Amino acid sequence: MNKIKKKHAQLIIIGSGPAGYTAAIYSARSNIDTLLITGSQIGGQLIQTDEIENWPGDYSHINGITLMNRMLLHVKKFSVNIIHDVIKSVNFKKNPFELLGEEYSYTGYAIIIATGSHTKLLNINSENLYMGKGVSTCAVCDGFFYKNQFVAVVGGGNSALEEAIYLSNIAKKVYLIHRRNQFRADKILINRLYDKIKKRNNIIILFNSIVMDILGNDISMNKIKIYSNIDSTVKYLNVSGLFIAIGHIPNSQIFSKYIDIQNNYVKIDYNKNYMKTQTNIPGIFSAGDVSDSIYKQAITAAASGCMAAIDAEKYLNNNLK
Ligand code: FAD
Ligand code: NAP
Image (cartoon, rainbow, N blue to C red; front, top):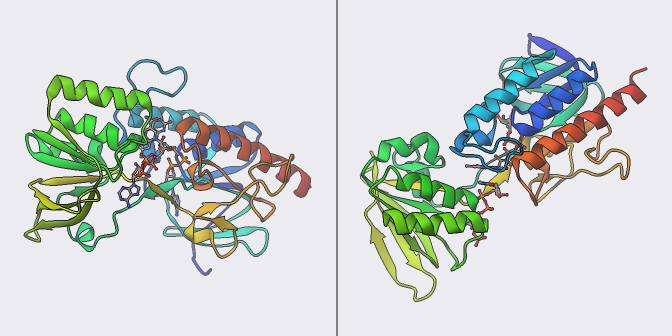
């Protein structure tokens, strides 16, 4: 790694979602020299949501940007070096560990990987062609552009239902397209979806349907091709927007040369009963959605960020005499 600008800290946290910010609060309060690298999505995935109602203590309307800005203010209260950079590659062969970013190169005696996940795509060619030209992965970010238009949301989990409900307040009609005949989303959201349908009557659910193609004039999309996995029929829907909400893929790729990964998730719990967040390399810890194949919630990400910081502190105390 031959970058000129170098930075060093005892502990480096990669990621500024609930896991990264919580880890930073805990490590700074333990008096560990802490550096946090935000990545390109400052605040993480939650900044894409308009309403969070399961963050304990915040019982009235709070949106993702407000919550994550409050976490950032909390981090800033302590002595944490926050750097806006994206890590491109790592060298975990020996301690101090090395990270190469777009702006700086870094060395640290302990690392917390809290890089979360990114949106999964449909894997059809046309979605790349029309990304940003009708295709979106964030209704809160882009929904406004579809005022009084026809749009579609694909997916059957919490994200898809939230997006459909959100868009129904803006768009004229929202098609909610799911590949099965049962939603994966929480009951409360399913009930809210049906309440919304009763009230506004502008969400149309298409179960057992697959988006096969996105069509348009290269400048913007105007149609999607839908296949029914019940009767094999094909139909076209005239929509100017398609919101993809079919899950997430952990941001683990840059670590895969050194760190054990399973189904894209960073494997942890190598130091049983002692350091739950440790990876296969002592000194490298992981927290949040990047290492959680099950829960994937803001509160579980924050909790594991806390655990990773406590584990890192133990490691540094035992190894940096
Ligand atoms: P993330 O929030 O994904 O943050 C990852 C961070 O890592 C980002 O800051 C990113 O910039 C950074 N990063 C990534 N790669 C790099 C790199 N190479 N270099 C440097 N930095 C990097 N959960 C709830 O509990 N309640 C909800 O209401 C809720 N609503 C949601 C709505 C939507 C639309 C979505 C998508 C998710 C929602 N979730 C909700 C889930 C919740 O957002 C996640 O569980 C949580 O954000 C995970 O936190 P994290 O810190 O692990 O990762
Ligand atoms: P998710 O729960 O994994 O749901 C993904 C959905 O997309 C599923 O319905 C899945 O179908 C479908 N799908 C997956 N691959 C597909 C493909 N190739 N083509 C078509 N459909 C496909 O993902 P999510 O909704 O993004 O949620 C991710 C995590 O964030 C979850 O843990 C969720 O609880 C959390 N979250 C929480 C909230 C909240 O608390 N309010 C809000 C948003 C997200 P199948 O059902 O057939 O598998």
